[in-house]
Image (cartoon, rainbow, N blue to C red; front, top):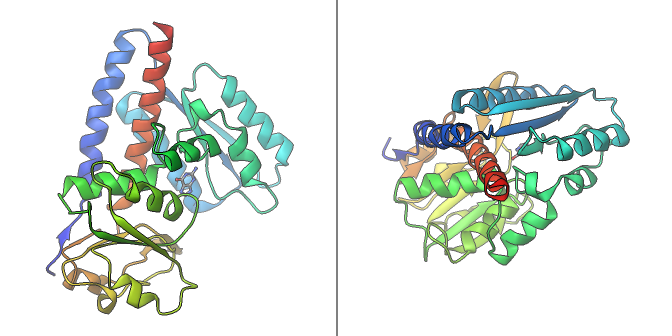
Length: 288
Ligand code: GUN
């Protein structure tokens, strides 16, 4: 293997430690930061993600409130829980875990979240801020990827980034973020997806490649420019085994690569804590 491993687990640990220090300061000033989650249905990966988010909160000294609805929940029941989170003073920021079970309207749910409590940066107001290049909570996986690349001094500014995938939580916001004129971004960005003809010819042009398609082994060594930074952000599951969008051989060609486990996932959760901390700090400023 030639590539440097982009160790998201280690970086996320350092970010959690910094968040914990700032949480402790808020607590000392009499303000307890709190995160909320809403989980609908019994999707096993979602259950595990949410459990890890609550464990992270515990580690950094944030309280966490958990709401669980059955897969048979109606849209009205979901909207009612969202309203409760919006008005719960113990919750600075929260998320509705996606995907929602079939039959529930994700767009309506995201629209109902108070934009000031939107820890995911997925409310249209916050996505609009991202489009404008204005301050606001960034979607956690894109923000985590940019932090990870920056921590390893991967050249991004002025380089060509190829984003594979156009989903709401990763590909679409990441492509906007990477193109912004700000540190760690400022890239030429191409967005492709699995419906693109000759996908490999696009991927091969990337100095930075982020695979967020959720298709195991989609990016192979032959598709990668030697020395490129390659990030596997899409996940799929084979039973309890997490599969990457990156073929193992990518590490033989890439300059930097994420590991199958401990790359983007921990960074996503770390950025969630950062966004929740910022929401609590806003509350502290408006209170004091
Ligand atoms: N499911 C997969 N990724 C995400 C995410 O970033 N936020 C939420 N709410 N659900 C997800």
